[in-house]
Amino acid sequence: QPSEENFQPRILKLVKEGGRLGFSIIQNTDSNDPIIISTISPGTTAHSHAGLEPKDRLLSINGVSMDGQDVSNAAHLLWDLTGEVILEVKYTPGDALEACKSGGHPNWQC
Image 1 (spheres, rainbow, N blue to C red):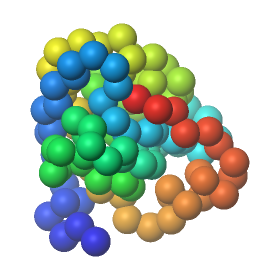
Image 2: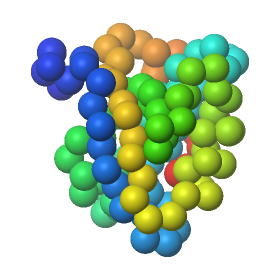
Image 3: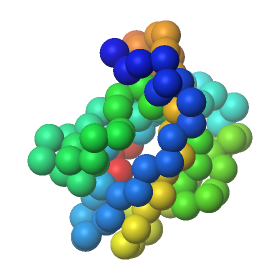
């Protein structure tokens, strides 16, 4: 369980070296719902970067706000990026991630 300080927005820098970054994102019903990190794959760039956690809300990607964005748009943006990827995230306590999963919404591998 992340500490209270993790509820503040955090800037994470990942380097994408071909392929995927190694995490999945999910969103509940529509583009007004937050985009949430759902899983992190072992042995990937995202896994080796200690700052990224499941339940983190994705606030921005390389300065592009995710407010009002659809999860598929976020996934395609992440797929198209190369080199350094700067994520702004914020830990989201509660059951938002579980609500997305129980709603049968797809995970997007990034």
